[in-house]
Image: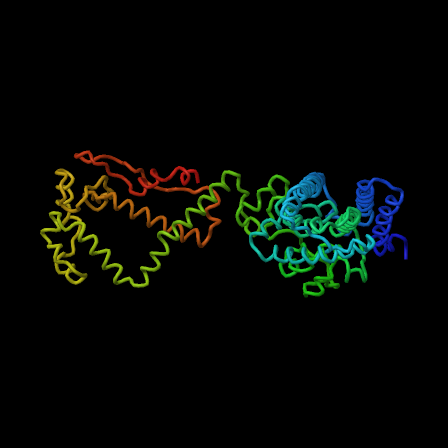
Length: 481
Protein backbone atom coordinates (compact mmCIF):
# COMPACT_ATOMS: atom_id res chain seq x y z
CA UNK A 1 0.00 0.00 0.00
CA UNK A 2 1.45 3.35 -1.06
CA UNK A 3 1.60 6.42 1.19
CA UNK A 4 -1.10 8.11 -0.89
CA UNK A 5 -3.41 5.12 -0.37
CA UNK A 6 -2.71 5.21 3.36
CA UNK A 7 -3.65 8.88 3.76
CA UNK A 8 -7.48 8.38 3.80
CA UNK A 9 -7.11 6.29 6.97
CA UNK A 10 -4.72 8.59 8.88
CA UNK A 11 -5.48 12.19 7.82
CA UNK A 12 -8.34 12.75 10.27
CA UNK A 13 -6.88 11.22 13.46
CA UNK A 14 -3.39 12.61 12.83
CA UNK A 15 -4.68 16.13 12.08
CA UNK A 16 -6.91 16.20 15.15
CA UNK A 17 -4.13 14.90 17.41
CA UNK A 18 -1.60 17.34 15.92
CA UNK A 19 -3.63 20.49 16.36
CA UNK A 20 -5.21 19.64 19.69
CA UNK A 21 -1.64 18.89 20.74
CA UNK A 22 -0.64 22.34 19.41
CA UNK A 23 -3.30 23.87 21.65
CA UNK A 24 -1.82 22.17 24.72
CA UNK A 25 1.75 23.01 23.70
CA UNK A 26 0.98 26.71 23.23
CA UNK A 27 -0.88 26.74 26.54
CA UNK A 28 2.09 25.24 28.41
CA UNK A 29 4.27 27.90 26.76
CA UNK A 30 1.93 30.46 28.37
CA UNK A 31 0.90 31.87 25.01
CA UNK A 32 -2.21 34.05 25.13
CA UNK A 33 -5.35 31.90 25.13
CA UNK A 34 -6.65 33.61 21.99
CA UNK A 35 -3.54 32.49 20.07
CA UNK A 36 -3.76 29.01 21.63
CA UNK A 37 -7.26 28.77 20.18
CA UNK A 38 -7.02 30.32 16.75
CA UNK A 39 -3.54 29.20 15.62
CA UNK A 40 -4.42 25.46 15.69
CA UNK A 41 -7.70 26.20 13.89
CA UNK A 42 -5.93 28.26 11.21
CA UNK A 43 -3.25 25.60 10.66
CA UNK A 44 -5.92 22.90 10.63
CA UNK A 45 -7.85 24.76 7.91
CA UNK A 46 -4.64 25.09 5.86
CA UNK A 47 -3.87 21.38 6.20
CA UNK A 48 -7.40 20.39 5.20
CA UNK A 49 -7.22 22.72 2.18
CA UNK A 50 -4.02 20.98 1.08
CA UNK A 51 -5.54 17.50 1.40
CA UNK A 52 -8.68 18.58 -0.48
CA UNK A 53 -6.46 19.38 -3.46
CA UNK A 54 -4.15 16.39 -3.00
CA UNK A 55 -6.69 13.57 -2.42
CA UNK A 56 -10.16 14.98 -3.27
CA UNK A 57 -13.22 12.84 -2.71
CA UNK A 58 -14.97 14.36 -5.76
CA UNK A 59 -13.09 16.49 -8.28
CA UNK A 60 -16.30 18.29 -9.26
CA UNK A 61 -16.63 19.45 -5.64
CA UNK A 62 -13.45 21.54 -5.84
CA UNK A 63 -14.50 25.11 -5.08
CA UNK A 64 -14.37 27.96 -7.57
CA UNK A 65 -13.88 31.67 -6.81
CA UNK A 66 -17.61 32.36 -6.37
CA UNK A 67 -17.94 29.47 -3.91
CA UNK A 68 -14.97 30.66 -1.87
CA UNK A 69 -16.08 34.31 -1.85
CA UNK A 70 -19.63 33.57 -0.66
CA UNK A 71 -18.61 30.92 1.87
CA UNK A 72 -15.88 33.20 3.24
CA UNK A 73 -18.52 35.89 3.82
CA UNK A 74 -20.63 33.38 5.77
CA UNK A 75 -17.58 32.24 7.77
CA UNK A 76 -16.54 35.77 8.75
CA UNK A 77 -19.96 37.32 9.43
CA UNK A 78 -21.98 34.37 10.74
CA UNK A 79 -19.34 32.12 12.34
CA UNK A 80 -16.87 34.70 13.65
CA UNK A 81 -18.50 38.11 14.17
CA UNK A 82 -22.06 37.08 15.15
CA UNK A 83 -21.05 34.68 18.00
CA UNK A 84 -18.83 37.40 19.48
CA UNK A 85 -21.77 39.80 19.48
CA UNK A 86 -24.09 37.21 20.99
CA UNK A 87 -21.56 36.24 23.65
CA UNK A 88 -21.11 39.92 24.58
CA UNK A 89 -24.86 40.43 24.83
CA UNK A 90 -25.23 37.34 27.02
CA UNK A 91 -22.34 38.39 29.22
CA UNK A 92 -23.53 41.94 29.83
CA UNK A 93 -27.23 41.22 29.53
CA UNK A 94 -28.48 37.87 30.74
CA UNK A 95 -25.79 37.32 33.35
CA UNK A 96 -26.38 40.77 34.85
CA UNK A 97 -30.13 40.13 34.95
CA UNK A 98 -29.56 36.80 36.74
CA UNK A 99 -27.18 38.50 39.15
CA UNK A 100 -29.61 41.37 39.80
CA UNK A 101 -32.36 38.98 40.84
CA UNK A 102 -29.96 36.84 42.84
CA UNK A 103 -30.28 33.83 40.55
CA UNK A 104 -26.73 32.58 40.71
CA UNK A 105 -25.98 29.39 38.80
CA UNK A 106 -23.29 27.70 40.85
CA UNK A 107 -22.24 24.15 41.49
CA UNK A 108 -23.70 22.75 38.28
CA UNK A 109 -20.45 22.39 36.41
CA UNK A 110 -17.54 20.15 37.48
CA UNK A 111 -14.82 22.81 37.41
CA UNK A 112 -12.50 20.49 39.37
CA UNK A 113 -12.22 18.06 36.43
CA UNK A 114 -9.31 18.50 34.05
CA UNK A 115 -10.13 20.49 30.91
CA UNK A 116 -10.12 17.43 28.61
CA UNK A 117 -12.86 15.69 30.62
CA UNK A 118 -14.82 18.94 30.91
CA UNK A 119 -14.59 19.37 27.14
CA UNK A 120 -15.84 15.82 26.52
CA UNK A 121 -18.78 16.48 28.84
CA UNK A 122 -19.50 19.75 27.03
CA UNK A 123 -19.43 17.96 23.65
CA UNK A 124 -21.88 15.31 24.88
CA UNK A 125 -24.35 17.85 26.33
CA UNK A 126 -24.06 20.39 23.50
CA UNK A 127 -24.51 17.71 20.85
CA UNK A 128 -27.55 16.32 22.65
CA UNK A 129 -29.20 19.76 22.55
CA UNK A 130 -28.10 20.44 18.97
CA UNK A 131 -29.30 17.00 17.86
CA UNK A 132 -32.89 17.84 18.77
CA UNK A 133 -32.69 21.37 17.40
CA UNK A 134 -31.27 20.00 14.14
CA UNK A 135 -33.91 17.27 13.89
CA UNK A 136 -36.69 19.77 14.59
CA UNK A 137 -35.24 22.13 11.97
CA UNK A 138 -35.87 19.46 9.36
CA UNK A 139 -39.40 18.78 10.59
CA UNK A 140 -40.66 22.32 11.20
CA UNK A 141 -41.42 24.24 7.96
CA UNK A 142 -40.46 27.63 9.41
CA UNK A 143 -37.14 26.49 10.87
CA UNK A 144 -36.40 24.53 7.70
CA UNK A 145 -36.54 27.69 5.59
CA UNK A 146 -33.56 28.99 7.60
CA UNK A 147 -31.77 25.63 7.77
CA UNK A 148 -32.20 25.21 3.99
CA UNK A 149 -29.42 27.79 3.56
CA UNK A 150 -26.98 25.25 5.00
CA UNK A 151 -28.29 22.51 2.70
CA UNK A 152 -28.20 24.61 -0.45
CA UNK A 153 -24.63 23.90 -1.71
CA UNK A 154 -24.34 21.31 -4.48
CA UNK A 155 -20.80 20.47 -3.39
CA UNK A 156 -19.14 19.99 -0.01
CA UNK A 157 -15.75 21.37 0.95
CA UNK A 158 -14.46 22.60 4.28
CA UNK A 159 -15.28 26.29 3.90
CA UNK A 160 -19.03 25.86 3.46
CA UNK A 161 -19.35 24.33 6.92
CA UNK A 162 -20.08 27.91 8.02
CA UNK A 163 -22.95 28.50 5.61
CA UNK A 164 -25.79 29.23 8.04
CA UNK A 165 -28.38 31.95 8.08
CA UNK A 166 -27.69 34.39 10.96
CA UNK A 167 -31.09 33.70 12.52
CA UNK A 168 -30.40 29.97 12.66
CA UNK A 169 -26.90 30.61 14.00
CA UNK A 170 -28.38 32.74 16.78
CA UNK A 171 -30.77 29.90 17.61
CA UNK A 172 -27.87 27.42 17.68
CA UNK A 173 -26.04 29.75 20.06
CA UNK A 174 -28.88 29.28 22.56
CA UNK A 175 -28.16 25.54 22.57
CA UNK A 176 -24.41 25.06 22.18
CA UNK A 177 -22.88 28.13 23.82
CA UNK A 178 -25.22 30.12 26.04
CA UNK A 179 -26.00 27.34 28.57
CA UNK A 180 -22.28 26.84 29.17
CA UNK A 181 -21.65 30.57 29.53
CA UNK A 182 -24.46 30.76 32.11
CA UNK A 183 -23.11 27.87 34.21
CA UNK A 184 -19.67 29.46 34.09
CA UNK A 185 -17.65 26.96 32.04
CA UNK A 186 -14.02 28.10 32.12
CA UNK A 187 -12.31 29.90 29.25
CA UNK A 188 -9.79 27.08 28.68
CA UNK A 189 -12.58 24.51 28.33
CA UNK A 190 -14.47 26.76 25.89
CA UNK A 191 -11.23 27.28 23.93
CA UNK A 192 -10.46 23.54 23.67
CA UNK A 193 -14.08 22.87 22.72
CA UNK A 194 -13.79 25.47 19.97
CA UNK A 195 -10.61 23.89 18.56
CA UNK A 196 -12.27 20.48 18.37
CA UNK A 197 -15.58 21.94 17.15
CA UNK A 198 -13.94 23.98 14.37
CA UNK A 199 -11.46 21.43 12.98
CA UNK A 200 -13.94 18.55 13.23
CA UNK A 201 -16.49 20.78 11.46
CA UNK A 202 -14.00 21.48 8.67
CA UNK A 203 -13.51 17.73 8.25
CA UNK A 204 -17.24 17.11 8.36
CA UNK A 205 -17.73 19.13 5.16
CA UNK A 206 -14.34 18.44 3.60
CA UNK A 207 -13.78 17.18 0.08
CA UNK A 208 -11.07 14.71 1.12
CA UNK A 209 -11.11 10.99 0.40
CA UNK A 210 -11.26 9.67 3.97
CA UNK A 211 -11.87 6.33 5.62
CA UNK A 212 -13.02 6.95 9.19
CA UNK A 213 -13.36 3.28 10.17
CA UNK A 214 -14.58 2.75 13.72
CA UNK A 215 -14.67 6.52 14.23
CA UNK A 216 -17.89 6.49 12.17
CA UNK A 217 -19.55 5.15 15.34
CA UNK A 218 -18.30 8.07 17.42
CA UNK A 219 -17.58 11.12 15.25
CA UNK A 220 -20.03 12.88 12.93
CA UNK A 221 -17.49 12.88 10.11
CA UNK A 222 -17.58 13.41 6.35
CA UNK A 223 -18.56 9.87 5.35
CA UNK A 224 -21.75 10.24 7.42
CA UNK A 225 -22.45 13.93 6.94
CA UNK A 226 -22.43 13.74 3.14
CA UNK A 227 -25.59 11.63 3.34
CA UNK A 228 -27.17 14.36 5.44
CA UNK A 229 -26.72 16.76 2.51
CA UNK A 230 -28.37 14.45 -0.04
CA UNK A 231 -31.21 15.88 -2.14
CA UNK A 232 -33.28 12.83 -1.18
CA UNK A 233 -35.26 13.50 1.99
CA UNK A 234 -35.06 9.89 3.19
CA UNK A 235 -31.25 10.21 3.18
CA UNK A 236 -30.88 13.80 4.40
CA UNK A 237 -33.21 13.29 7.38
CA UNK A 238 -30.47 11.28 9.09
CA UNK A 239 -27.08 11.81 10.78
CA UNK A 240 -28.05 14.97 12.66
CA UNK A 241 -24.98 14.88 14.92
CA UNK A 242 -23.01 18.11 15.09
CA UNK A 243 -19.69 16.81 16.44
CA UNK A 244 -20.47 13.24 17.43
CA UNK A 245 -22.82 10.62 15.99
CA UNK A 246 -23.64 8.89 19.29
CA UNK A 247 -27.09 10.48 19.66
CA UNK A 248 -28.06 9.38 16.14
CA UNK A 249 -27.18 5.81 17.09
CA UNK A 250 -29.16 6.09 20.35
CA UNK A 251 -32.26 7.62 18.69
CA UNK A 252 -32.22 5.59 15.47
CA UNK A 253 -31.27 8.21 12.87
CA UNK A 254 -27.83 6.75 12.01
CA UNK A 255 -27.45 6.13 8.27
CA UNK A 256 -24.37 4.78 6.48
CA UNK A 257 -24.86 2.61 3.39
CA UNK A 258 -21.48 1.15 2.46
CA UNK A 259 -22.33 -0.12 -1.02
CA UNK A 260 -22.71 3.29 -2.69
CA UNK A 261 -21.81 6.97 -2.54
CA UNK A 262 -24.18 9.86 -2.08
CA UNK A 263 -25.61 11.10 -5.38
CA UNK A 264 -26.84 14.70 -5.81
CA UNK A 265 -26.53 17.28 -3.04
CA UNK A 266 -28.51 20.45 -2.40
CA UNK A 267 -32.12 21.49 -2.59
CA UNK A 268 -35.13 20.04 -4.38
CA UNK A 269 -35.25 23.39 -6.19
CA UNK A 270 -31.99 23.26 -8.12
CA UNK A 271 -32.39 26.98 -8.94
CA UNK A 272 -32.19 27.93 -5.25
CA UNK A 273 -29.84 30.95 -5.17
CA UNK A 274 -26.40 30.36 -3.65
CA UNK A 275 -24.93 33.84 -3.25
CA UNK A 276 -24.59 35.45 0.19
CA UNK A 277 -26.98 38.38 -0.31
CA UNK A 278 -29.75 36.24 -1.81
CA UNK A 279 -29.50 33.68 0.99
CA UNK A 280 -30.17 36.39 3.54
CA UNK A 281 -33.57 36.70 1.81
CA UNK A 282 -34.45 33.10 0.85
CA UNK A 283 -36.08 32.12 4.19
CA UNK A 284 -38.56 34.95 3.65
CA UNK A 285 -39.19 34.19 -0.03
CA UNK A 286 -42.01 31.65 0.15
CA UNK A 287 -41.47 27.99 -0.69
CA UNK A 288 -38.37 28.67 -2.77
CA UNK A 289 -36.72 25.75 -0.96
CA UNK A 290 -39.21 23.31 -2.52
CA UNK A 291 -40.62 25.03 -5.62
CA UNK A 292 -38.85 26.69 -8.53
CA UNK A 293 -39.90 30.24 -7.64
CA UNK A 294 -38.12 33.54 -8.27
CA UNK A 295 -36.32 35.18 -5.37
CA UNK A 296 -38.51 37.93 -3.99
CA UNK A 297 -37.26 41.46 -3.51
CA UNK A 298 -37.63 43.06 -0.07
CA UNK A 299 -40.58 45.04 -1.42
CA UNK A 300 -42.24 41.83 -2.66
CA UNK A 301 -41.68 40.19 0.73
CA UNK A 302 -43.39 43.08 2.50
CA UNK A 303 -46.29 43.00 0.04
CA UNK A 304 -46.68 39.24 0.41
CA UNK A 305 -46.73 39.51 4.22
CA UNK A 306 -49.44 42.17 3.89
CA UNK A 307 -51.27 39.91 1.44
CA UNK A 308 -51.07 37.02 3.91
CA UNK A 309 -52.61 39.21 6.62
CA UNK A 310 -55.33 40.32 4.20
CA UNK A 311 -56.10 36.70 3.29
CA UNK A 312 -56.40 35.83 6.96
CA UNK A 313 -58.90 38.65 7.42
CA UNK A 314 -60.89 37.45 4.38
CA UNK A 315 -60.87 33.94 5.79
CA UNK A 316 -62.27 35.05 9.13
CA UNK A 317 -64.66 37.71 7.86
CA UNK A 318 -66.01 36.22 4.62
CA UNK A 319 -64.90 32.67 3.89
CA UNK A 320 -65.70 30.95 7.18
CA UNK A 321 -69.17 32.56 7.46
CA UNK A 322 -69.86 31.51 3.85
CA UNK A 323 -68.86 27.93 4.61
CA UNK A 324 -71.09 27.98 7.70
CA UNK A 325 -74.07 29.30 5.73
CA UNK A 326 -73.53 26.74 2.97
CA UNK A 327 -74.32 24.00 5.48
CA UNK A 328 -78.00 25.10 5.19
CA UNK A 329 -78.29 26.42 1.61
CA UNK A 330 -82.09 26.48 1.40
CA UNK A 331 -82.60 28.68 4.45
CA UNK A 332 -79.60 30.84 3.54
CA UNK A 333 -80.89 31.51 0.04
CA UNK A 334 -84.38 32.20 1.38
CA UNK A 335 -83.03 34.81 3.82
CA UNK A 336 -81.04 36.51 1.07
CA UNK A 337 -84.06 36.54 -1.25
CA UNK A 338 -86.34 38.04 1.44
CA UNK A 339 -83.76 40.72 2.31
CA UNK A 340 -83.67 41.80 -1.35
CA UNK A 341 -87.46 41.77 -1.55
CA UNK A 342 -87.74 43.81 1.67
CA UNK A 343 -85.20 46.38 0.45
CA UNK A 344 -87.11 46.94 -2.80
CA UNK A 345 -90.76 46.53 -1.73
CA UNK A 346 -91.54 50.26 -2.15
CA UNK A 347 -90.28 50.50 -5.73
CA UNK A 348 -92.73 50.75 -8.63
CA UNK A 349 -91.89 47.17 -9.61
CA UNK A 350 -92.17 45.98 -5.99
CA UNK A 351 -95.57 47.60 -5.46
CA UNK A 352 -97.03 46.28 -8.73
CA UNK A 353 -95.82 42.74 -7.93
CA UNK A 354 -96.93 42.89 -4.26
CA UNK A 355 -93.50 42.33 -2.69
CA UNK A 356 -94.97 42.79 0.78
CA UNK A 357 -96.89 39.52 0.38
CA UNK A 358 -93.83 37.45 -0.50
CA UNK A 359 -92.87 35.22 2.42
CA UNK A 360 -90.97 32.38 0.74
CA UNK A 361 -89.78 31.03 -2.60
CA UNK A 362 -93.24 29.65 -3.47
CA UNK A 363 -94.99 33.03 -3.13
CA UNK A 364 -92.06 34.66 -4.96
CA UNK A 365 -92.76 32.43 -7.98
CA UNK A 366 -96.45 33.25 -7.83
CA UNK A 367 -95.93 37.03 -7.69
CA UNK A 368 -93.05 37.47 -10.13
CA UNK A 369 -93.20 35.90 -13.58
CA UNK A 370 -90.08 34.88 -15.49
CA UNK A 371 -88.84 37.96 -17.36
CA UNK A 372 -86.31 38.60 -20.07
CA UNK A 373 -84.45 41.88 -20.44
CA UNK A 374 -87.00 43.40 -22.82
CA UNK A 375 -89.69 42.96 -20.16
CA UNK A 376 -87.56 45.14 -17.87
CA UNK A 377 -86.07 47.62 -20.33
CA UNK A 378 -88.82 50.19 -19.79
CA UNK A 379 -88.35 50.04 -16.00
CA UNK A 380 -84.58 50.51 -16.36
CA UNK A 381 -84.96 53.40 -18.82
CA UNK A 382 -87.58 55.19 -16.70
CA UNK A 383 -85.50 54.86 -13.54
CA UNK A 384 -82.43 56.24 -15.29
CA UNK A 385 -84.25 59.17 -16.88
CA UNK A 386 -86.47 60.18 -13.96
CA UNK A 387 -84.14 59.19 -11.09
CA UNK A 388 -86.97 57.57 -9.14
CA UNK A 389 -87.05 54.08 -7.53
CA UNK A 390 -88.73 52.13 -10.31
CA UNK A 391 -86.84 48.83 -10.27
CA UNK A 392 -84.50 49.24 -7.32
CA UNK A 393 -84.72 51.35 -4.16
CA UNK A 394 -81.28 52.89 -4.76
CA UNK A 395 -80.16 54.49 -8.00
CA UNK A 396 -77.63 52.71 -10.22
CA UNK A 397 -74.35 54.65 -10.34
CA UNK A 398 -73.31 52.90 -13.57
CA UNK A 399 -74.39 50.22 -16.03
CA UNK A 400 -72.77 47.21 -17.61
CA UNK A 401 -73.30 47.24 -21.38
CA UNK A 402 -73.65 44.05 -23.40
CA UNK A 403 -72.06 43.77 -26.85
CA UNK A 404 -75.33 44.04 -28.75
CA UNK A 405 -74.38 41.33 -31.22
CA UNK A 406 -77.85 39.74 -31.05
CA UNK A 407 -79.90 42.94 -30.77
CA UNK A 408 -80.05 46.30 -29.05
CA UNK A 409 -77.35 46.58 -26.35
CA UNK A 410 -78.60 45.86 -22.85
CA UNK A 411 -77.74 48.06 -19.86
CA UNK A 412 -77.52 46.12 -16.60
CA UNK A 413 -77.98 48.37 -13.54
CA UNK A 414 -75.00 48.38 -11.15
CA UNK A 415 -75.72 49.53 -7.61
CA UNK A 416 -73.25 50.35 -4.88
CA UNK A 417 -74.46 47.15 -3.23
CA UNK A 418 -73.73 45.23 -6.43
CA UNK A 419 -70.12 46.41 -6.45
CA UNK A 420 -69.69 45.58 -2.76
CA UNK A 421 -71.16 42.09 -3.26
CA UNK A 422 -68.94 41.52 -6.30
CA UNK A 423 -65.90 42.75 -4.38
CA UNK A 424 -66.61 40.27 -1.56
CA UNK A 425 -67.16 37.47 -4.07
CA UNK A 426 -63.80 38.17 -5.70
CA UNK A 427 -62.10 38.32 -2.30
CA UNK A 428 -63.49 34.90 -1.37
CA UNK A 429 -62.45 33.50 -4.75
CA UNK A 430 -58.95 34.99 -4.28
CA UNK A 431 -58.69 33.42 -0.82
CA UNK A 432 -59.64 30.00 -2.22
CA UNK A 433 -56.93 30.38 -4.87
CA UNK A 434 -54.43 31.53 -2.23
CA UNK A 435 -55.32 28.61 0.02
CA UNK A 436 -54.77 26.16 -2.85
CA UNK A 437 -51.51 27.69 -4.11
CA UNK A 438 -50.10 30.70 -2.27
CA UNK A 439 -47.03 30.65 -4.55
CA UNK A 440 -49.20 31.82 -7.45
CA UNK A 441 -49.37 35.22 -5.73
CA UNK A 442 -45.60 35.63 -5.22
CA UNK A 443 -44.93 37.19 -8.61
CA UNK A 444 -46.70 40.02 -10.36
CA UNK A 445 -50.47 39.77 -10.77
CA UNK A 446 -51.89 40.29 -14.26
CA UNK A 447 -55.31 41.94 -14.25
CA UNK A 448 -57.39 41.54 -17.42
CA UNK A 449 -60.41 43.85 -17.19
CA UNK A 450 -62.43 46.09 -19.46
CA UNK A 451 -62.40 49.89 -18.94
CA UNK A 452 -64.50 51.04 -15.95
CA UNK A 453 -66.14 53.71 -18.17
CA UNK A 454 -66.77 53.09 -21.86
CA UNK A 455 -69.33 55.85 -22.41
CA UNK A 456 -72.34 57.69 -21.03
CA UNK A 457 -76.10 57.34 -21.48
CA UNK A 458 -78.21 60.36 -22.48
CA UNK A 459 -78.92 60.92 -18.78
CA UNK A 460 -75.19 61.22 -18.09
CA UNK A 461 -74.92 57.93 -16.19
CA UNK A 462 -71.74 56.06 -17.21
CA UNK A 463 -71.65 52.54 -18.56
CA UNK A 464 -68.65 50.26 -18.57
CA UNK A 465 -67.15 47.30 -16.71
CA UNK A 466 -67.96 46.56 -13.09
CA UNK A 467 -64.75 44.50 -12.79
CA UNK A 468 -62.84 47.42 -14.30
CA UNK A 469 -64.36 49.70 -11.67
CA UNK A 470 -63.33 47.31 -8.89
CA UNK A 471 -59.79 47.10 -10.28
CA UNK A 472 -59.51 50.88 -10.48
CA UNK A 473 -60.66 51.29 -6.88
CA UNK A 474 -58.47 48.51 -5.45
CA UNK A 475 -56.10 49.55 -2.61
CA UNK A 476 -52.75 50.80 -3.87
CA UNK A 477 -51.00 47.89 -2.15
CA UNK A 478 -52.99 45.39 -4.25
CA UNK A 479 -52.34 47.37 -7.42
CA UNK A 480 -48.58 47.16 -6.74
CA UNK A 481 -48.83 43.40 -7.14
